[in-house]
Length: 368
Picture 1 (cartoon, one colour):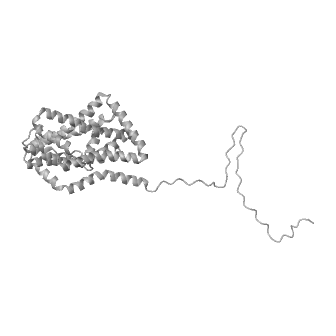
Picture 2 (cartoon, one colour):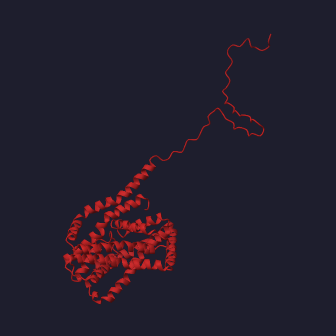
Picture 3 (cartoon, one colour):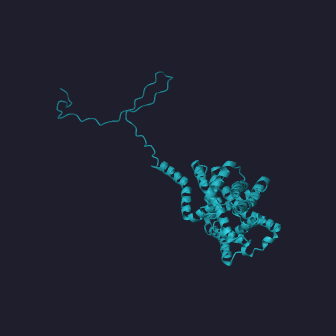
């Protein structure tokens, strides 16, 4: 008779608690073989894979497509707003001498090359010539949409960054470019005045009090606002001082290289002369009774007088001053106005759509 109460069990024994299976380890076949890794029958909990933000690639593609189509859309809107001048200028050019217009188009193309030369002369880094000229052709389209050359500078800044130029150096190059162009125009004006002293008898070219006040406000308010902003906003001091140091250092380096000096200052002096030659060729195609030197000097004087007024591509104030200057030389008002309208059509509207397409292509290829 057993002492354990097995026979007295009133029910089945409780089931054992579930214990996780022990990992099974396969013993090595030989003493020299390394032990096999232990495997467990229980499936370990694996971390969930990282989920990328939903729709971010699609949003990036949509943004790039919008950036590609935006220049063309702006051109369509601007053409709809300024359609009367476009139609009138095109009608004027249709009756002009085509050979003079072809010469004007040649000077327009030289203007893009001169702009690319000045851009190269304002930066120490070597830039690819073909892409640089293409970027300046595209920048011309952007320049006629935004005032004060903001569009052209934005396109050039993006081009510099795509070529690996640091942001501080790229910004310093744009500042040097903007400073060199008006300074280089002064000796060109002096050459014209010394070569043609009778051109000084142009009292009508002197701006009136309202225009002088607007020019003075534009020239003083910009630097004053920038200095006040840097003084009051402390986080801006470090980047602004770094930009000034970079600009001074790069300017010193550039002026030790004769090729950069010639490109910067020679291109800056040639650019307004080429633009004046475009106007002179358009005027010759329409029968404008002014000499080549008179038209070029009228453009230089008009750009100097009201060039500080911010306008898209200088359209507006410069046009009015240019018409006034040519009438002061003795040109009929209607013919001077037709010359300026034809000049704007040839330099703005004719290359605007191709420039916008080039801008879109550069954005699509991630050059900008």
